[in-house]
Image (cartoon, rainbow, N blue to C red; front, side):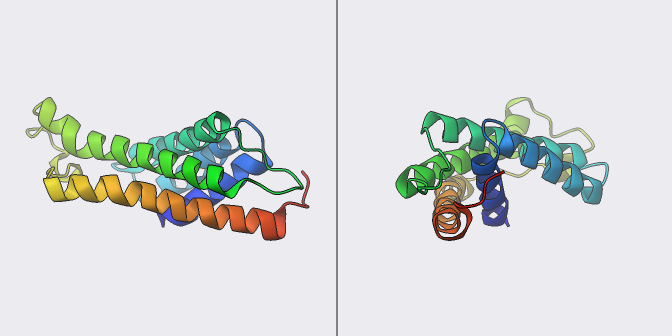
Length: 152
């Protein structure tokens, strides 16, 4: 599911310069938050919007331009790997590391938090960039093959 979201965020960042992924993340987060309910809705919206911010930020840092000549595949893969790593680490820290550091085990939302472990940390640190790299490859393939001639 994260690969699909990352592809849509990257494509929106290529079509709408500077803030495309933030807009798409906010709309996607709002729609998903409406389905998630009151307990998970704010978290869903926040992390979806934050993922859009990370995508826009790393596309800007790596100077990726969506043009009629195509997009640099290696830069887009690297950019999406970093943005997926950042959202994976930040959401993992919010739900696993932060509650333990503030001793929030006594509050009513204990079921939202995850117990941190070495295996889970390694999985987050590996699957975040791997998911982003797959999304970056898929986005560059779609852009270079089908979407580069579309202008908005």
